[in-house]
Image (cartoon, rainbow, N blue to C red; front, side, top):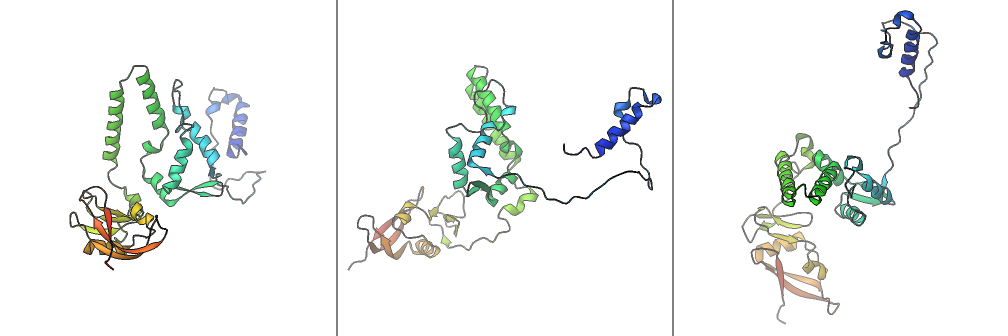
Length: 284
């Protein structure tokens, strides 16, 4: 408390009541400010206008975030729980690296800055999933399992039921978050048809995917086949593979010789699992 403000005026008023015998009825502590009326004036009142700006909280660094993870939710955890906070000393640094790699946070010098993707995730997640109280609750139940007060099967069934409930209650985006999803974002034009089910195949950030979720056909841009040959899987290449089943390419890299070569890449899809490719060479 830097300045009492109106609380100081209230204190003076209460003190004035205590000096009057008729106010000695035991209710002086509950007295409020006197009633105010329009046009009333007060003497000897000093007021100033001070302009300033607030300072935002300091950004997390890896050190301060590790410290915060260690104590997060500790006040909600029972005293007999051995492990408190988020993660363990052996896993907390890996958790931070994982959220950075997933694009939720980025490093700017020593600071960790949340990305739009990270802020949107926190905005749409149910409160129960972003609260450290959930970890404290599960740690408490694990302690009960250790003492024989709760069976392991009951603990796992509780987590399964919790998962079902969360999914059931949050199976559609809330109206205020509709803009974070891609309903209004233009869908890319189909590059071809899926060789497995005939549905359209479209380009995504990391590859080319069949529209049918039950199908599972996908061609990853960063698959080992393409990265080893130092040849990016472009939309034109993907379209040719979908249309003809093969594409002639130049400048493929060989790990064995360190040189480049030309070849025909065939789409080799077994119908399930991962998509494979085969090489063929033109006769001289």
